[in-house]
Length: 258
Image (cartoon, rainbow, N blue to C red; front, top):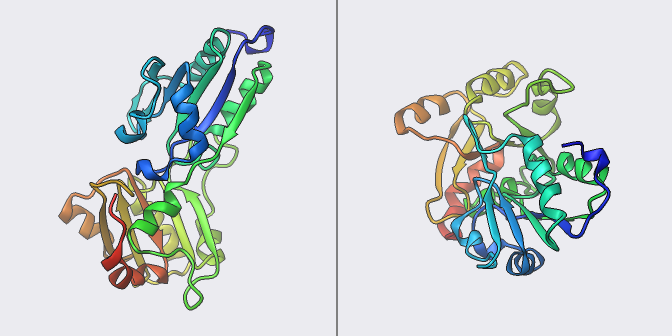
């Protein structure tokens, strides 16, 4: 399909952030759009509680992407959005977390605008913030951290640069939040240690953040891989690195339950 040649459009595409999983964190605007949508194209990590909000008469399409399992290639997802917008008034592209935070929302919006498709962004709560909060880990604290860096641990092939500059990340922030970093964590830790972080730097892993099945693994940079191997801890998870992780032992006593 040649996206540049699309002229006639009936509907509008909404790029909606579903948040990290807890249905209570879905925005009111996003919820209204799900309830009135004609078509919803959703990602793999969108929780069942969020999917239950979708208009029962809407067409639901799983376009989810997980490591090693791709339901639809990115270009086909965009083409599908264009196709559905020609025949439906409200098309929702439902993405986990926030569409513009490691969610490819910018790429999809660019392609839709090139195809002359009306499109609107509806932000969602990103998992890097919410998962840490539900685990009792504040990303900033007046005594421990006044800066945060959000970074992806899983980079696309053919990216504009070959790798994250982990040395700059290590030296630039007191708190580091890594998305999709579990599979590459051994290499990431090695780079952070080379950049000067101590083996005793606190690290927290939060799996299925904000959901009832949320799990946490707390440790140090030098020994966390041994803990992962011992416990069988797996993705999907958010990684938080920095002194603020030490607050987990105090603040998690009152942590929110998904």
